[in-house]
Amino acid sequence: MVALAVGLLGLGISAFDLGPEIFGGLGAAVVGTAYTFALAHRTGGRPLIFGALAGAAGLVVVLTDNEALRTGAAVLVASVAAVLAVMGTVPSRRFPKTIRETFIAVGIAALGSFAALGFEPVVMVSRFEYATLACSLAIAFFAVYRLGAGLHGLGRRGAIVVGIGGLMLALTLIYAEMLRRYGSTGLMDSIDEMQRWCRIHLGGYPHPIQALFGVPALVWGTHMRARRRQGWWVCLFGVALTAPVASTFLNPDVGLAEAALSVVYSILIGLVIAFVIIRIDLALTGSTAAGSGRRAAREADEASAVRPEPGRTHALL
Image (cartoon, rainbow, N blue to C red):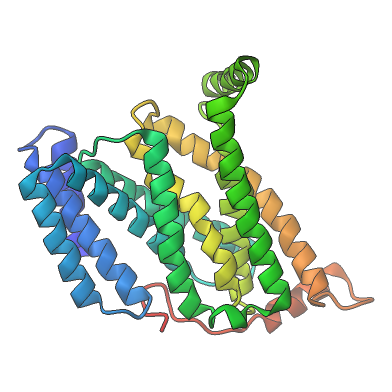
């Protein structure tokens, strides 16, 4: 926590031009080191080794001031922040608590975005976002593989859910990129006009990847983890929420207020979807006994959700 505070202080000094520019890079390196240490600790790795490597790499990036290294460091810091945001959640027996976990994850990822900006990368925004999402998914997969008892721990229904989720996410990303590159002028103008209207009247607009995949996955996953450790496999897709958040400050066309409102709108839509999915999941797993009322069934389900998991700041393994 001390290292994180020092890093954020350095980033703040640089952002408000209160000191030398190098403070921004050093602050980013310190935050990246703190996040790497925390992620390694949380996932049962070797925090001292990985933290030292991250710190040394960050120092090299700052001192050499190489454009490619700065961009690569920004991607890695954003990716680590996105994964740590998911790993930093705790199981939630009740739906309202999953909302709290969602906003905590967003906050962790947002600080990572601030650190990534401190490296002053030279990026094409869309490529940076794709690179961050890909790296985040890869890191999260290896972490969840251990936490979720491997692929064999999924079960048949879990494997189907994860397989369909991964396929839909991939198809959505491919479709969005194809639409951006080869979409008709009329269609793109309509989309731009809709976004412009939302920006003017609502202050921001929901992002489909976050609203349709990231938020429902994180909410459902944290809810499921209170009952089954397979919930970690669902949480894997929570990086579809946190990775874009960790890339937010790299987009010069989006202000802080618009970015915050866009995330809130995405969360609101995602919560509705997640609530429906959770109710269906409880019905399919037999948590609602036949002939019992809704309140009695809900209380019975919450009473049975007793799967233990270490606290937020403790190692999961």
